[in-house]
Image (cartoon, rainbow, N blue to C red; front, side):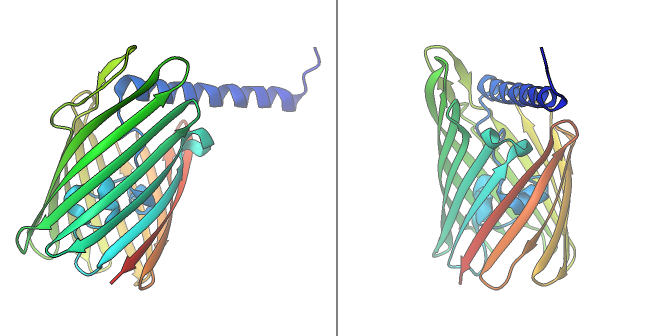
Length: 288
């Protein structure tokens, strides 16, 4: 048998890729974590280790339903692409949008993850309202559809999320999210599992006009708590530098963004000490 160094390296690399794919999809199938296994709320929050329960933007449709309330924009829309661990089969695509109506705002999320052997889709509708000068609340309905090859079949579930935000003052905001409190099930002939239920709390503190600290804590009923913290610094009005850490996967994140008057582009990457980098990009348009 005549094996070159290149062919041996290629075989090892292919084997490692297949192992990562198997491990990731097996974990997703067992835990049925349609809300946290694959979702990253755009590259801005990706650079912040997905920290932002107390923040506000159109991308909050993937974090806190109350957070889609913003002060100026009539409507917003965004699109993102995440290449998890630089493996195309683990990539995800997201579309988000929100429309201001009176004191409230309607939001939409379309999330797609995976490839032919494993696909996961989410469709969410959100309504959030400014209940008082300092208090916001939002509700969200989610439809999940998962398809697994090799005889595992297809299954779906409907869940609900509740989000709250409160501004103590101009510098401090807190947020709370409860996901799937009714413990919806994903069931087929070969498996029966609950969609994970998660409660999360967050804090945003404006250290200065161009510097913000964000911190979240999340507890899944079946997993250890996850703590995350991040900083967002804007050396210039249109340029933003970001970085964050999280405890559950011991991950680091970093990125930057450029945001002129009506649109923004964000680039970021998550880093796992074993599996490597997960680059991502997102675009957002704001109509005032």
